[in-house]
Every structure is written in structure tokens, then in C-alpha cells.
Image (cartoon, rainbow, N blue to C red):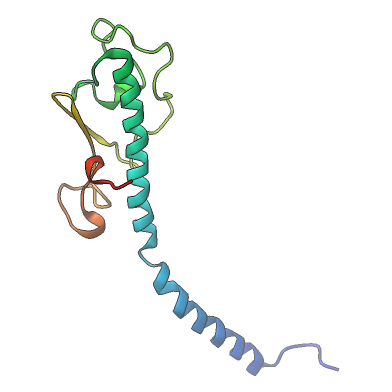
Length: 139
């Protein structure tokens, strides 16, 4: 009557697990960053929709100087007289990219854009470190 596995059986199982992981792991490497880049576009689109609601109420987008903070609290009640009763974004909501950095908001005479500096947090870059713009996201 057998009550345990032999050393050879355990080694075969470990070898099989090693072979399977060598096939699966390379396919997963880099997927996390790719997912973060896709999530960045989705998050920027959500922020863009909040900005559109702000514009519907106030007739203009927030100035670049007022930034995305204008979605959480009215920065200038005299300028934005039709600001919503409740803020457009909750105070605790994150207007950040998946790397936990604030989006860069630019209002160029009513043409708005959102930017993320990518994984490296620096201007420029290539691949996963490349900057991302809302206008370049494909939906």
C-alpha cells in the first residue's frame, strides 16, 4: 500500500509546471503596461465627458490655469456662474492616470486636450514610456 509520492514523481510534476510557466509567462510580460495604456485612454475619455458637462453648464471649458481641479470645486464663482450644485467630479475621485500622476489639462482657446506622460512620467519617450494624448486615443 502506497502512502506518498516518490521523489521521481514530484520531480516530474515540478518539471511540467516549469515547462508550462515558461510558455505562459512570456505572453504575460508587458501586458500590464499595455493594459495601463488602454486604461489611460478610457480614463481620459471619462474626464473629457466631465469637462463637456462643465462646458454645457458654464458655456466654456475651465481655463488651463483652473485645470481639472475645477471639476471638483468652483475655482471662480464670478466667472463660472452656472456651476453645478454638486461638483462634476467627487472630491475623492481621481483625475489621474494609472501611474497615479495627474493628467495634464490644456485649454487652447476652447480646444481641450488631456495628456499623460506615460510610464516614465517624463516628457517624450517611446514605447510604454511615450506620452499619451486624448486626441490620439482611438475609441
